[in-house]
Image (tube, rainbow, N blue to C red):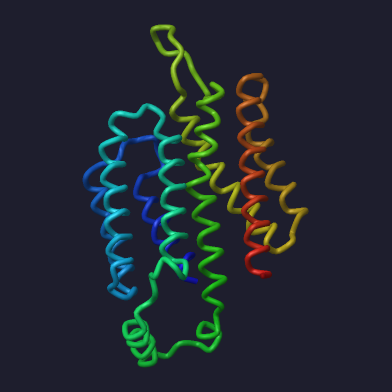
Amino acid sequence: MRFFFVLNIIIISRLFYGFRNEILSPKRLGYILIFQILPLSLFKFTPSLLIFLFLIISLDTATYFLERKIKNINGFRLVTFVIYFLLTGLFTSRPGGMEFNGHITGSLSGLADLFYIPEGIRNINWYAVNVITAAVVLLLNESNYLIRFFFEAFSLVPTQKSPDDTVELDIQEYNAGRIIGMLERILIFLFLLENQYAAIGFILAAKGFTRLKELDDRSFAEYVLIGTFLSALAAIIVTLLVKSILAS
């Protein structure tokens, strides 16, 4: 529970990066730091927590400065995610020493008793909720960095001719593809989680139908096809991991 709770804090805070390849602004850095630090107040005030906070704040700050010098932002954000993941696993493990503060969590539970909460909500498996939330955010945002890194590494990004006859990145198509990919991965994940495999074919068919005329362009067709395969593969892998975790 501790691992997925802290991981969710980290990856949800990374949504403040935005869904475009823009460097981190001071304002968004502030939002990220606040979002990460406040929920960690639920943990016992120990040397482990202080060290974890120091490392996280240092990594956030380093990201702010390094993104202004690094060209491949997607690759860099993938690396920082791996570092966050490893730090979270290390400090939330038993040797790591990070534990919830029983007094604070108990007080919050007592506060919740003052309000009417349906029995169904009280009996929710919060461990499963944390696991599924982590999966959704991973597919929503972090998978984007992996797919965009792949596109850039193999020169598969969509392009268009500018007025001066030079080839440049088709920003509108690139951003539209990002949103379509997000929705595609989330829907595939949800359908796979409920074992509704036939519905996945409907998603892929709908995507192909809306872009039917554009697929006459071979390079664009390859961009769409590879993006679709990568999105589906990411959703399948994450779903298998979630099912394995929840079954254990």
